[in-house]
Length: 382
Ligand SMILES: [Zn+2]
Image 1 (spheres, rainbow, N blue to C red):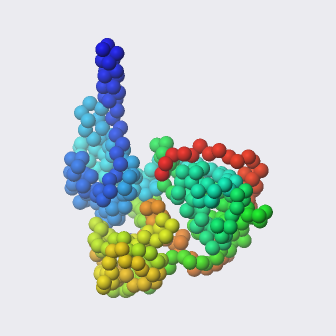
Image 2: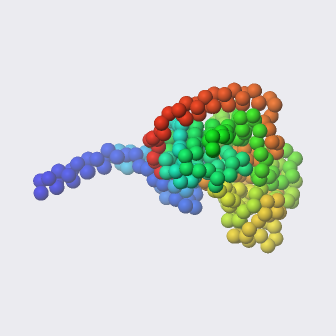
Image 3: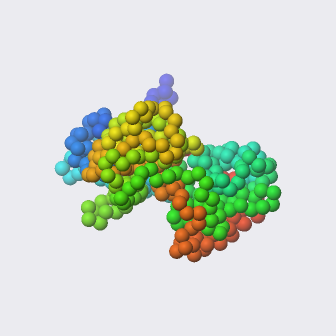
């Protein structure tokens, strides 16, 4: 009995100190709903500008939210909600004890990993077994797209992947970034390197154009590019833009950037009229601010690359007619420009820098091949 009481006392004292609460962002949860749920004045939401509102609709289901509460009263002091891989919403009490909103950089740690695999099952499965990261396995296949027939790889073929992964509060966070990769098949080596333009090339700076995403509409100019974090020198705050804005006249046809299946057709907060299409290998595209949808276009319908799906407009929070085009990989936004391939070799002015990188990474790959198979301490789930 004494022991039981002691345990209860211990638990209670532990709870008393536990002022940091971690919750997961729910499916279809909105920032407005979240504020209401936590008894925070919704006027906070209505004072946000267009970009911040747009960003707020990008909070990903399952994201870990940190809520800091007063140790004694249990009242919320601060909330952190990651929105991009670089920026988070910070809600905190200001001097007047009122809640304020700001975008601040996420503190994370970047680790560089070298993964060496001697093939046992399939390359995809071997990568997942070793790292528990489907994102890494998919990105790896993408890096070699059209250059290697992965079905032909055999037991004993070797693979080296040099990649970066972010960690936040001890958890794996965001998408892995493959810097360099090599496949050794029957004694022949195949390389892929990430260039400063965000695309993968072989060691000579070439790539196969293959079957890439297309620009989804004819446009006058790009009015906003993709960025996960940018300091706005005039507004004095951080911004992000998770897609590309193509300025185009109202009514300009919008085409599917790649073949796939329509998974959403309707309104989506600040994005207005939206179509979302799911594509093979974990990709998804989003077309926002549309004036209308192609007549007869339905959810679950299959569409072909280049097929008209809707029309440019200015619905939702938008200052003029434009198409906001978003590309997602494993439900995380990536820069669409990385996957829209127009030329089959790297730009001349970026070539020198690229070849320097190739030299460095080839050396690292060589070292990894000489080592024994590396055991990775990287087993957190996604
Ligand atoms: Zn936009």
